[in-house]
Length: 455
Image 1 (cartoon, one colour):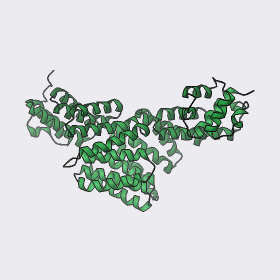
Image 2 (cartoon, one colour):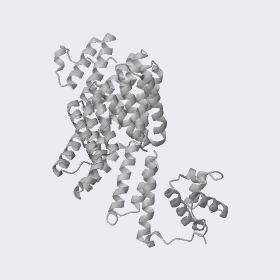
Image 3 (spheres, rainbow, N blue to C red):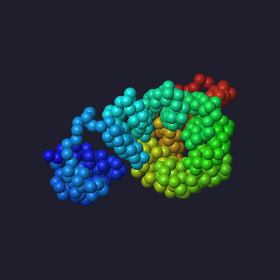
Image 4 (tube, one colour):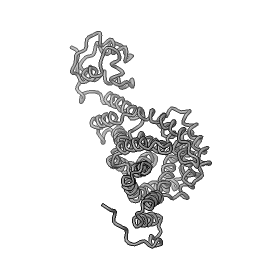
């Protein structure tokens, strides 16, 4: 007699190995919910349905029609169990790549539950790494950091300096988003210092770590260190002759030049990076790079908001399918900036509000930057109270994150607005806050104790 539970498991395994979703397998005439019930062993399919599924799965119908009850899981050959779990891992990886981190998280967790860290350490670590990546993609940064830190400890105990690098890159990325710039820099710098002692040949992951560190220094406002690391990353990338490494190095070097006010020099570099990614298959990375390119266009001496808006619409379309909610949030913030420059203030507020909802409470740096866009849009609309609240909240988040230059800019924007509204004492206080972020004494302005904001 056909084993319904075993048949459902076999169909699920073949579907995932083929890279198909339940909707893909359902096709015409069947519903995704029916496929779900079938895979869970809650429906008995007809011979006709099994023939349809075999055709779509490109397998011999006998594999389904003649399916016999499998041995219990604990009695299966260990090699067969590992093969099935590896199929599940590939399916989870594909789900993550296709912008479905929730499914990836669930499958990785299922794999880990079926493995033993003692007897199958590599498979267990692969699942644990996948869980951390999926958590990061869903925006659960603090939980992702906990998992990544556990992985870092495990690799360091085994003295596997190569395997630890991707984990360090991910940790630095998470700490940056959480607003802990100092810790991210300390971790990246110490890892790079250890690599230099080992005198290893640079690899793609080395370049990624250097590029990540460039971005973090830019956030903190240390543009000299960022520029040095960016030039070194380009040298290393050219030495290993890896297009992806060169693209990452060009990308971050363009950010440094842009932050230094050298937009004319930044544009060719980011265009080179775009050309390299356009030749590859990483559509998510290409969309994110288009977003960065749009950001440069928006902050030129003569902003090209319309071109930037077109680029961002392309990015949103791609990232809605392949990226994470955070990727989309970054695009929404940039779209808000574009709409603000085009004079579409209500639309700017709508895009920024959507970005804040997608970011959630953990992506603090981007939240702060989005709040500054909200403030500018409200100010353009004549709503001074809303603008003041957004400026102050954004400045405080930036300051707490260690992004001193950005915080100083936000305080200065608030001060100018307060001065224009006739709130001189509050304006002096805001100027003093900004100067303090730059390491200067606010007493230079001769201000008194910060005025209390009116209720």
